[in-house]
Image (cartoon, rainbow, N blue to C red; front, side, top):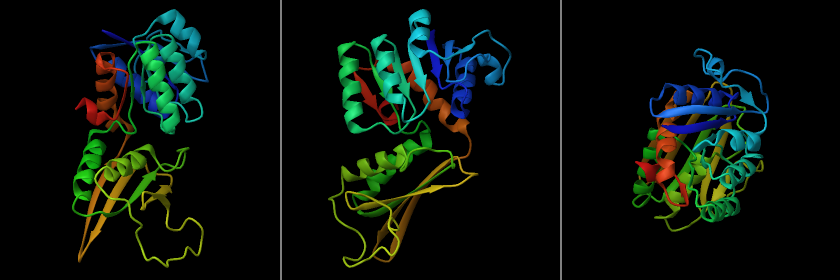
Length: 262
């Protein structure tokens, strides 16, 4: 049994993670942490009470409970500190919170190496989203003109999404950087053309009703190709989260991307 602590347990993703851990026969929920404490984790998950009460002090919970894995779905402004705290306690973090910078990832890798404790980060835990990214990298070899539109709920804090950034990075591996659009184009309103990444454009939509969606649009002579993924509910991420929780202890150092586990 892999002992799991869920950080950010009272949030919408956190509650879904709690249920996924509780329902899996190979995982044991030993702790839950959130800025709002006191609730029973089983009740938050929509199952029966299980006696695991949500705590507010992550370091204290790690000290007392000694989990194998910490699953983190918190906020971009606190996730970095959470991960370093887990690694200092030799607990493997499985991170779904996006917003970490490349510098922070490098520091996490260094901390994982120093503590001989593997860590795992994924911008998206949905299997279909991973396939979308892999297919986009494949398509970019033949259709290098591409733009990305990502659509999320209006409570998402970072833009563009981690999935969009990772998709662009994977495309850039096989695509020579070049600007797209007319050389004399002018934005009548700043930001109209979206964010720029190696000449590609990324557009972020934030509206109530969405969960997590992305389309990658390729343009060529007389044709377009669109690769789209839609997460219709948060359950779509849970198989990937559970897989990472089970495999992270067998990894080396820091691993980024669910595709590395498939």
